[in-house]
Length: 240
Image (cartoon, rainbow, N blue to C red; front, top):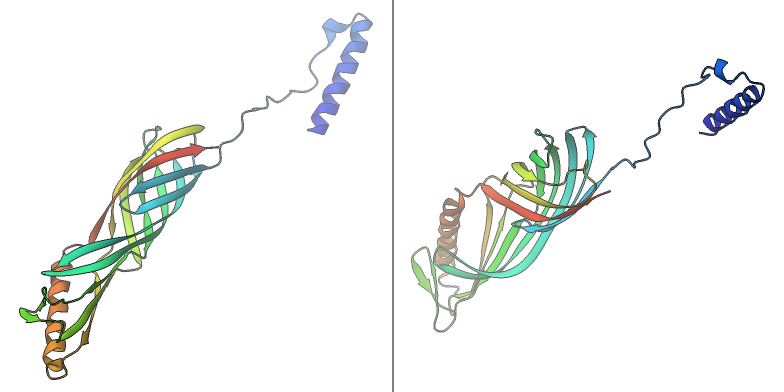
């Protein structure tokens, strides 16, 4: 930049000198002055979202004209009572994901097609406790509080989950505020189930543990069909 200013200053002094001598019309440009775009380059898009992945935070940047990479983290924890195979669990749903995604804008607008993968730390942990009035039915057998102290369950999924989806927004090319939407599917494969029982009746311990093992298999069979997690996230984003 200093060199351009110096050259232009010299050109101005030279032209002024020639003009003073009456030779201004004979002057030809000695340098092409480049046109400088003073508009700042927009590098990043940041977004805050909410949806089926919990509360999320996105950061994206372009790598080609219609192609951008996006990274996000999402999470939420809340207590939830879930009835699974006639057993009511008082539990906690922990949502935790981190995504590495590629956004393609095929129409040159904010509409995009997205692909990538998530680290999937989603899990459900629950406890079922029999009471004096509400026993537990495990593998078709009814057990009371004298037989079982509590039944603990944990449902987890594969750590890496591929993702495909469509969306709107997160366009790094457009400065300012905008609306963003993601609709897609995360493939988390078959769930893993851990079912553990606290036995109060030593006489029935072998039978109880056998029934819990059967209950675990029934639970696995029930949730086997849920290999895809729906993703719907919406929020606001800002490009700068």
